[in-house]
Length: 438
Image (cartoon, rainbow, N blue to C red; front, top):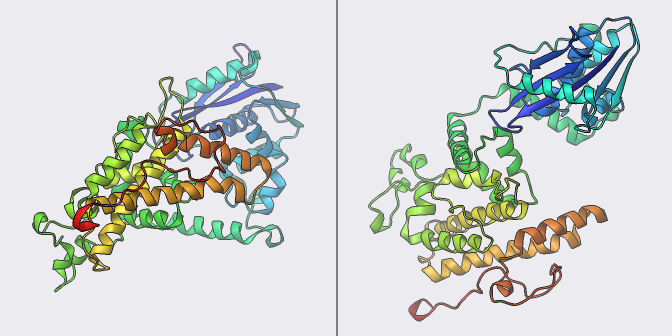
């Protein structure tokens, strides 16, 4: 018996993703199938690929030899060369572990031999093209049913071999178990929901919560201090505004003390975008000018949820392809601008320093951006990685900052590889303030 299988997914990686599976045994064969991945399974392309193999095995008679032909190296490797490793690790931190285990159990229960064959996708192979078409039909179906991923007790993998585990993997396993039991707070749900509304408007995407959390852990794009600040922002954990309103005799601390603000609640929106003492408008204007040099037409953030949404920003060209460098620059500039305004406020309120002037805030922002730029520029040189990884990081850095370097903006020609060139600055150089604020 020979079966071609394939998986498909509409809006892969989105909250509204729809995945399906297809299997083709032959023209008008009764075992041909197009099914939707159940609502109990994360909707993505890999889920469709694995479910297609599982369904093909379930539809095939047990005794004859079975050849399953798939274009998914991930699915084939998960069932073959990675199987023993995953079992030794107790499937901790393995994507779609329930589907993989159900598929392995089904293949092992067959009396006949089963072979898995890889074929290049979309290469004109009849069976693969038909399976792909059926997978698309499956993804287009509506479903309210769960996918059966049950495994007999005798075939279930329980626990992991400590001799095969690393502390990092064990820690992730413990976190995953705890996370499954913890209910997200209403504040977290609301902040991520509104951030998704922003991404829907700007990118026509609704990323899942996991994508926001993954972005916060990306040290290549977000420094640790800003990541921690964003985590507190999403959780509503900053001791500002409404936090103080709940504490008797300290309610006044929740309001802005600047006369022009008329006792407005000092929440993050007020701090970053409204309070004149923080000169947020000036800071966001500088950020907007810098982004326009990169041909980024997106407006800069106007509320805290747009700052959160910037962590998953994807700016695309006219052909719909992601502009990797522009997307990364938008993320970096947006977050550094918000972080700088936050620090200016803290220096005034907590540090009891005099209110900063407009030019001082502008210079602080430029200094923060250039400090991050310098660290980013030198990271391919000093990072602990192989040459291929260093080259990839170097290419990403060049894509990110080319076009916004002050020398380029002043009409000077820079070499294609300016990574190690001294004196390269982003934006306009800091200017010494005039008059009494000097």
